[in-house]
Every structure is written in C-alpha cells, then in structure tokens.
Image (cartoon, rainbow, N blue to C red; front, side):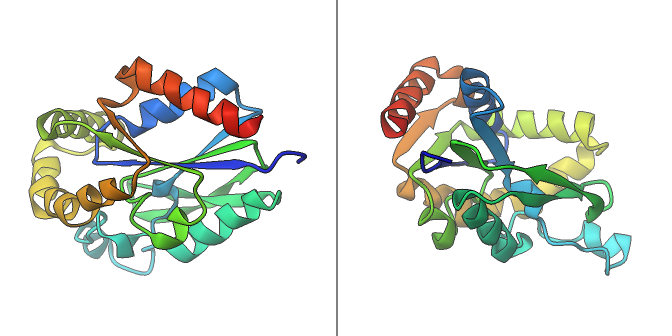
Length: 206
C-alpha cells in the first residue's frame, strides 16, 4: 500500500452505538477503503470447558479477550499483511473452525467495549473515539440485541447485566473514555460528529 493505513479505535459501553459509527464509515468510504475489526472476534476459546462453565464466565472483563492475538493481527494489517481473524460462536462460547480473511485497507476500524482499555492497542491508534450514550438506552439496546440475535432469554440478559456487564463497565469501560481523542454522544445518530470524523480521516489520508 502506498499510504500508511489509519487505525481508528471506537470504544463505549454495550449498546452505545459503536457499530453504527463503524458502519457509517464503511458506507462513506466503501469496502475497498475501510475494514471493521470487532473486538468480539477475539474472545478466548473456551471449548475446553463444559458448557455450564462457559456460561458462567465474565465476558466483560479484559482478560476475556485474547489481546496477544488481537494486537499481533492489527500490527500485521498495519504492515500491509493479510490476516485470518477468528470467528466466534456466541451460542457455544467457542471459536468456530472458520476464519475471516482480511486484507490490508487504508482505514482500519477497531470497535469494542474495551478497544481503548489496552495500552498496546492504544499505541497503534491514530484516532481514539469513545461513544457516550445514557445507561438506560444502552441497556434497552442490549436486551433487544441479545434476545433477537443471540437467542438469549430476557431474564438471562438482565442477570448478566447486573452481575458482570454493569460493574465491568464502571471499572474498565467508562474510565477508558479519558484516553479518547473524540467523545461522541449517541453514536451513529450524531451526524455532525460523523462528518467531522470523516474530515479528520481525509486530512490524514491526504
């Protein structure tokens, strides 16, 4: 690649609107220019545990992420090398046998609740974004997503939210906001912020 790629980190609580911002950038620049890498792909493989043990794991703690592989693959993409990203199966809490092949792009977007938590990832980023959305809105979005997309019951979502999601947000996610270059309220609904972000990206690329 003739131009060094830009790495953009997008963090924020569950249901904050991180994905909608990433999708807005993808739509603005196209598949050939932008690739979105999701933190969720790098959950550690728990296939060695019983299903009950897997369900009881804290998936909102930083240790749940295979940060070594995450960091290694981002460095490879920045260097212009293709990578095979894991595909995570949320129904079994294990990695699929399949992988997602990703080639280098001009803009690499990394999104996840802990995207700004790890120093090793922050050091690679050109732009660090935190999406700040009220807790009640985020909770409603979380319930809707997990019930519709991950075949969860409402009770199980609520229990997980109270047991791990909320305390981990307060301990690890919310504090990472102070590492952000840009704080965007309401996620992808904030069109002004998206336009400003595109302007910044264009300036770096040029």
